[in-house]
Amino acid sequence: MACMSGRQSKNNGSIKLVAGNSNRALAETIASYLETPMTKATVRRFADMEIFVEIEENVRGQDVFVLQSTSFPANDHLMELLILTDALRRSSARRITAVIPYFGYARQDRKPGPRTPISAKLVANLITRAGADRVMTVDLHAGQIQGFFDIPVDNLYASPVMVRDVKEHYELGKMTVVSPDVGGVVRARSLAKRIDTPLAIIDKRRERANESEVMNVIGDVEGRDCVLIDDIVDSGGTLVNAAEALLEKGATSVSAYITHGVLSGGAVARITASKLKELVITDTIQPTEAVRVARNIRVLSIATLMGEAIGRTAHEESVSSLFD
Image 1 (cartoon, rainbow, N blue to C red):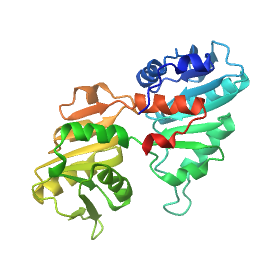
Image 2 (image 1 turned 90 degrees about the vertical axis):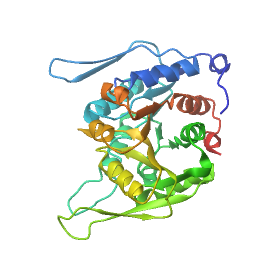
Image 3 (image 1 turned 30 degrees about the horizontal axis):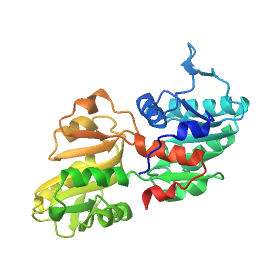
């Protein structure tokens, strides 16, 4: 990954970084990487919890990047993003890029039944109408969401960060990459190809209503260190069940690399009590205290990757070459 050193002088201060409240730690690390101070902005609540935003520096004619994950509480953080974008547009920013490490509502990307919304499309419309000129995100749940926007979308991949970490922690000759479901095969296969390891798939089936899921393992995992790959871990139930299924098939150990650690409800306790050797997530969502102290959850920083992508975007350089 190329170094950004020296680019600060080239942009002559034309890059502005603005952050909402969803993930200040990540925003500040990205700012440090870019050697660009955070633009002063107020994002606070009125007594009735309405959101108030004020940009406290001149951004006229500037290339502004708004850093905000739409993680829990999703609706509050989405509104912060929209209002920040509107404030910047009305302040005559030259270009506004919504940098959304975790894009909420992405799981509602189609109509699973009659009279249901496609909320991912609605959110795309809101971000566009608020005034964003482009969007940058990480590991979209479904690639077709890029087509929901009528503005450019850069979908970054956490795989370079994960590949580097896997190589540091595993003996690749004894490792198998596993997709926890059929829908995630493309993502898992891509990582398996990068590190030249076998691929296995877990096929989940519920034979009858009100019966528990049966997990069939497709591929040989006996005597292997299995690493589950996915984009989102929410309740953790699928991961825990997948780990048990793999161990029953003779796997030596089971770990998981997941980009977005949503980890709602009792997920952290469920994973801590499970047979998972380790869950590795990135900081696209700001880790809670429970995540930070969990014995078998580790957080990788995505800041360098995102900082590099922001720098390249600002200088009209290739972003896709980061993943070649």
